Length: 200
Image (cartoon, rainbow, N blue to C red; front, side, top):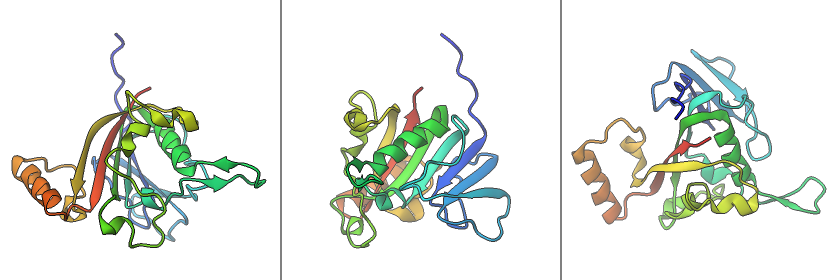
């Protein structure tokens, strides 16, 4: 068996606004958003509309990618440019995330999820995920293959969270896990956290 290559010490935050997040503390930080801020401090932000554009970075460039409150804004289906067919922007984006991750790289995504009202109250939320949605992108099922998904992810973990102060992955103490379970039981855990590993 071939030894695994070290992951690139680069992180990409999707839909980052002016302040990309870096949940794994990688040395080099990048972001993608609709526009580039006039000034950035120690990171690079590229402009792209990820509902229609590809992620503007090369294959295998990142050790990790994050998406905080972003996936819910990516449409599931759109007409093609000629209006005669359909395309699947969310599936295309998941494929592109897999493309820019090095093998073994991690996707850390947090999104409001069904059935919590937070998933539906914002009128710009067009992509509502459930506890079962990851099966379209993760082994062994990879259900999105039927829609053109070429990537492969493994599920590292999926948990229900309340986003603040629960966004970052560093604290996984027993106390923290019990708190998450209590919030989920009480219906206060509005968001779904995906941590997926790119297989390639």
